[in-house]
Length: 90
Length: 206
Length: 123
Image (tube, rainbow over all chains, first blue to last red; front, side):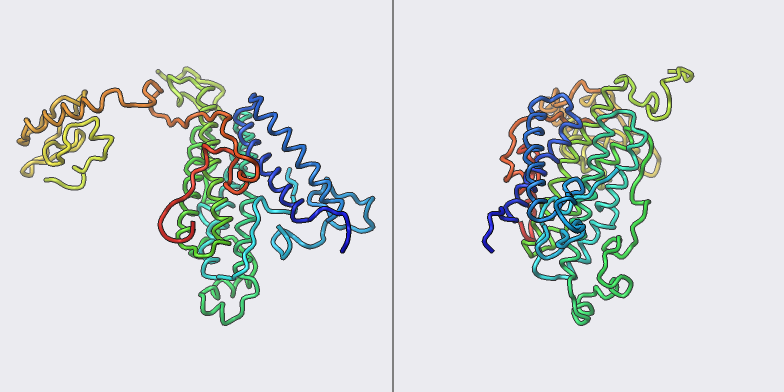
C-alpha cells in the first residue's frame, strides 16, 4: 500500500537498539551515578527511544501504556496483535 | 511498580520446531539457575538493602531478568508451536504436554517444578551479593551448556545474547559489593550486619 | 602415600615447596606414617622446610623451594586488600560500541564482551 509511513521493521530496530543502550547504561549508572559521560550517553539514547516509541505508536499501535493515545483512535488498540511472541511480533 | 512493553529486549524468530531442545531450554525459565529464580532473588533482596546504588541494581537487574524470562518462554513456545501428537510422542515432550498441553509452566529440564528454594534472600548485603554473583555465573554456565547442544543458529542467537547479559550483571554485582565494602570498616567487614544491626554494638570483645 | 591431595594446584605450588608431589606433604595435611597419626607442623613461611616424623628427602625440597620462592614472591595483583573478601575490579566508562553492534553483542561495553568459544554446537 502506498503510504508515507516509516517501515515498521526499521522503527522497531531503532527502538530495540536505543532501548538496549538505555538498559545497559542504566545499570552502569546505578553503580556509577556521577559519571558525566554515561549520563550524556543516557540522555541521548533516551531521547531517541522516546521519539521512536511515539512514532511507532502513531502508525502501528502502542508498545507502552504511556504511548497509548486513545484520543487518536476509536478503540482500545493496546490488545491488538501481534504480541511479541507471535508472527510479525518482535 | 512494573510497566510492560510489547516487545522483546532482543528478537526471537525461530522457524523450525524442536521439542527436544525446548525440553532443555525450559530450565532457563523454571530451573534452579533460570531467569525466574534470578528475578525473584534480586527483587526479594532489595527491600532491606541499605545502600541506594545496590537497591537500584537489584531493582533494575531483577526487572531485566523478567524480560529475559519472557525471551526464554518465547523460545520454548516457538520450538513447540503446533506440534502434532506424533511429534510429541517421538520427542518425549509428551510427558510435559499431558499436564500442560503447549502452555508454558515453570519447571526445570528434569521436570522438577520451580521453587523458591532455588534462591536465597539472606538479609545481609555481603551474603546476598555473593549469592547474586554466583547466580550470574551459574546462569552463564547453563547457557553455555545449552549452546553446546544447539544446532540451529536461530536458537543460538538469542541464547548467546542472554549469556552475555549474565556477564554484565556479574560485573555490576561485583561493583555493588565494592560499594558495600566502602561503607563498612575494612578492618572487619563482618563486625555487624548493616541491614539489621544499627552499628557495631561494642558489646562483644574485639 | 601419594594420593590426590598431593596434586597441588598452581597457586599452592607458587607458595609451597614441591613441584614434585611426592617429596613434601601438603602443609596442612595430617599424615599418618606406619599407622600412627602424626601431625605435620604448619609452617609460617612458604619457604621453610616442613618437619614431620616421616622421612622426607630434603635436598629436592630445598631446590624446588628456592625456585618457587624466587618465582612466587610479590605476585599478587591485589596485595594489600583486606583479607577474607572478594573484589571485582571497578569498570571505567570507555570503549563503547556503536549502538547496533552493542545490541548484537549483548553489551555496549567492549571490555565486557566475552563470547563463548566452547566446542560443539553452534557459535
